[in-house]
Amino acid sequence: MENKNSTIHVEVAYALPDRQRIVALEVPEGCTVREAALQSGLDKQFAGLDLATADLGVFGKSVGAPDSQPLKSGERVEIYRPLIADPKEVRKQRAAKVKARKEAQ
Image 1 (tube, one colour):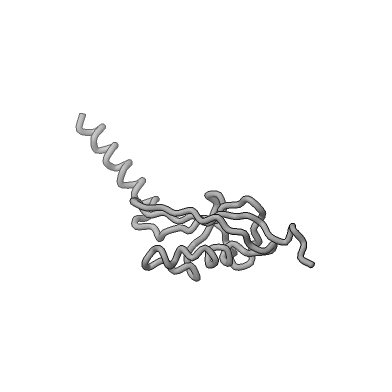
Image 2: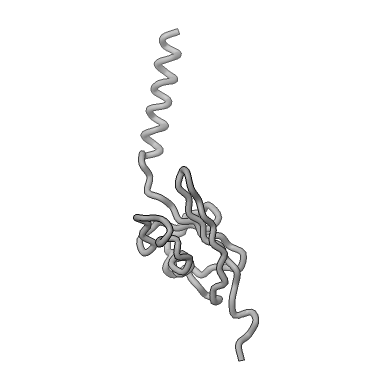
């Protein structure tokens, strides 16, 4: 006989600039971050999304080992898109613009 507590409720989220989706799932206890992402089926809704290799996180914190980290009930898995620009480089460019503006005054 199956125990009522053998499954947990989690969500899996993915977003593009113009479209997002959150999928609620009931998964077995011990389900990993990657397994939940794969079970979400979001790769079928978003062309080019490869859940087998995508960077994943839980509630905004990147998960270093998504294939082995188990989820807890109520957690939200987030699927991250590759960065278009290096955030450090963007900050440097922004700082250079501010400095140039100040020097021009």
